[in-house]
Image (tube, rainbow, N blue to C red; front, side):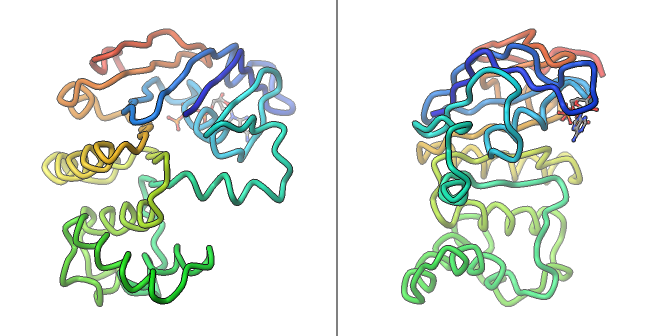
Length: 229
Ligand SMILES: Nc1ncnc2c1ncn2[C@@H]1O[C@H](COP(=O)(O)OP(=O)(O)OP(=O)(O)O)[C@@H](O)[C@H]1O
């Protein structure tokens, strides 16, 4: 589903590489934690998958496409295959829960009929049935993150990228969010999650990839968080 082939990335004007000769493969349906200190290259790794940035050398393949060769008009199509969730939720504050989720389908031209079916179905899946009319500010942090996950997943993407999704949540709420991501993963969606949350990583025992100063220093099948902050 995702392959990095000797990928290095050095940002313009920087001496040190943000990513240094990364070689790895993530297969369909895997759940991967991406760990490492601040500045180790996690966001750069995720941005390469989304083609928000390009490798300096090497190739990145996502869903069968070499992203470096993708013409720019095909990038939106690539991004439709990838749902994204962030630490700060990024909901539209002036839209209700239903409207936030529906909007993701409207912008890709889905029919009213499909939207009317998929949105309630997805809200139910994330545990927000009956809350569709609420505004984001009327929800707890955990509920807001559920809306963000519903929005990311409503189009049934092949890949879900989560960048510190529990970073603003208390431990109990975080466990609920992880159960939801696990459930999404069980629908054969590949999940890649960057995190500093050691207890979550230790509880889930999924594949752990650790970056250190841009290098891949650990790749374990059922790993733990394992490095000191
Ligand atoms: N747009 C940019 N221009 C120049 N340097 C950048 C840019 N983005 C990131 N970097 C540098 O690349 C390196 C890796 O950064 P990156 O954001 O990928 O790390 P990270 O592991 O995601 O960190 P964090 O956990 O703090 O989000 C850092 O040295 C950073 O300063």
